[in-house]
Length: 456
Image (cartoon, rainbow, N blue to C red; front, side, top):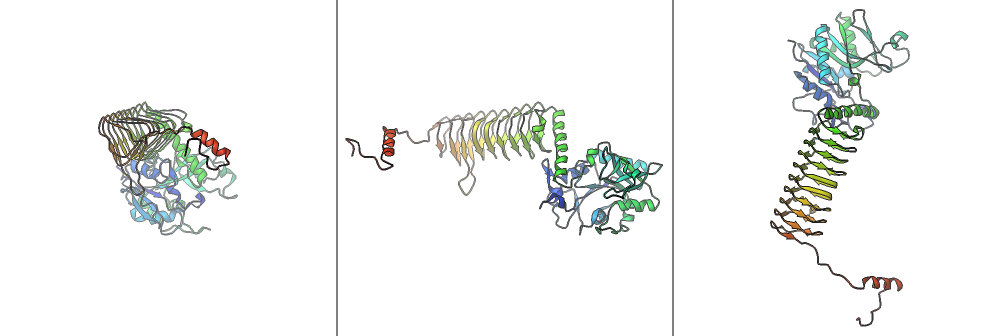
């Protein structure tokens, strides 16, 4: 059996065309940094080592998993310089797969197929290629009569390629696999004889051919896997493809997504079967949704929904929200860092923050938990079977016992015993003749009204 490969991901590029203070490979792609897409694919292959090449700023150190090794490219001197910076991580007895942090859609299956094709070929290096209907702007792959790669012809400016070479539709993807020893043998011979004074990895292929070694090519069946990101237009193109793949994965697993073009779901979201996601819903972060749920036109971030939950329309579930089995968050409801018990309902126009709500509790419209006193957050505890009147405010910290009621319009500042009715509002007082007095003020030009007969 061949040795497990080393996967090397080049991610130290400055990405100036992104016009951003954020490094290119840290831009979000469906809920995770772009670089994490090839990193996750690499880890899934069962690679012996996964190494990411970063810039001296080490911006990637905080986002990479512990099992991923980090190499630092001291200066921005091209793809060849990036591989040189990781030379000490390369096992000469194992294949080395070279990926790019800005080519995010490559998957574990494609990587495995490339390594297997390289092993079968017996070549010193194998490049992943694609056959494009429109190959404009890509380097064309010129093959020998035996099918090996003779050279890659760049087409960046007129005269780089002949007319015959421009008719070639097979292009270089920038994804390679090398024998470790062969790669280490030519890295020191790379030169920077170009206008940019940079070392380019494709020169390693030329050096191998000069030494009499064979360079093979493996055609990738899905050309989308080789799409790179150089600017925000390309990022959006890749995002659309990634998003469609995420939606299709959920639909094939038994989730109904009504009008997928209007729905956004991050890559780490988990959704159970027979759940329905209705139009104009966004589900972000590490949100989990159980079976038989319905989410209507709502925004969910890092929350958890158990089976049979109903959300929306126009609900906002923030991080730390847990809706237990059969719970409901209705129209224009915002919930944050709260545990809403089984069968409990927050039907509409309410804010529930830092709260625990018991089973089968029904909170009326306009319910507010006042969880912040200007200095610290406090928690509200509402028991099971509580009936909250409309327009009730719970000023935390406060506890409401099981089976209790609150009267409409109450501002609850003290604990409510189980089964009690909390009436926390001022007594109504009707001022007779108030409207007539207001008319008198207007007639007197805004001055004070004169006392009526019998008044003093």
